[in-house]
Amino acid sequence: MHTTLIGVDIPRFGDQRRDADAQRLLRKHLYEHLQRAFEISHMPWTACYAEDRGDGALILLPSDTAPTDVMDPLAHHLTALLRRSNRLANDLGRLRLRMAVHAGDVEHDDHGVLGAALTHLFRLLEAPAFKQRLQQVPDADLAMLVSQELYQHAAATGLINRAAYRPINVRHKETRTCGYLWLPPAYNTGR
Image (cartoon, rainbow, N blue to C red; front, side, top):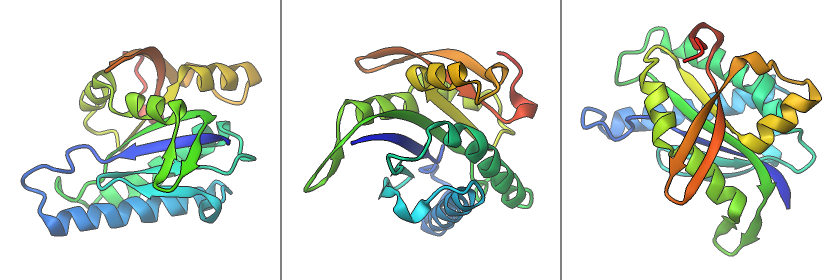
């Protein structure tokens, strides 16, 4: 099945200062914000395939959902929700997210999903350059890394603001590629 894949991760989830109560709160907010952002963006949360990943989630959208909808408006709505809830949060309760987006074919088996597209998604999400870039903007609540293929498709259709994305080299495990980083407008400085 060809689909749009989203991987999200909570940075520093395992920080020793974050006990089980703090982790439960972060996970609760993660799913509340994802569901709300999907709803505001008119995307079908209940029709998505979702797997919990402990400190994040994997989401596969229905095959008829446009991948560019994740790039815009979903990322913008999710940023606004995070900013609002983090306004009064302390360091332990502040929810920041890394989000990777890719499109491709996946297969279902008795244990979940698999395929090269899924592997690629998680190489993007876990790329050291992506993690490092988010550390460089400590006030940003969301950073999104879009696969090169998806970015090129979206840029060709004119459905995104290409100036809002910056290329970064992804070198993680066997993956060598370029991803396109989106940060909330206040943090998109071109670094």
